[in-house]
Image 1 (cartoon, helix red, strand yellow):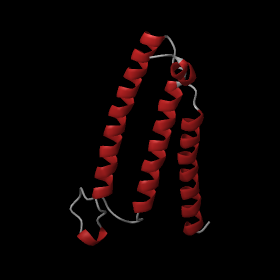
Image 2 (cartoon, helix red, strand yellow):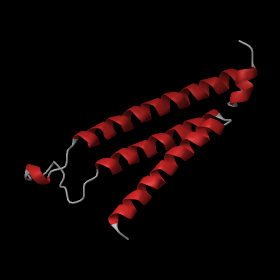
Image 3 (spheres, one colour):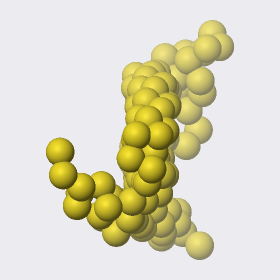
Length: 117
């Protein structure tokens, strides 16, 4: 299979992951499912970003290599930052969902929206 078809297939699959996360986020009735769908969307966006900046044959910038064959470390640094921030947001969202469950006794979006105050 030529590399262009493979690249298009990978991009299509990554976009399908992102879309499934968005659809799950829009249709989730439970707060925990919404958090999981948000993580799926984030992972798909990270994969899309890494697949767009990927260049075959490039060497990591850790080893002493010529700069012509060295990969740019900026996208990887941004992805690591995104992963750390995403983990912090996920832990905060899960903690808030625990507090919501203890206070209201449910994690259903519709039941929470129907309550007064």
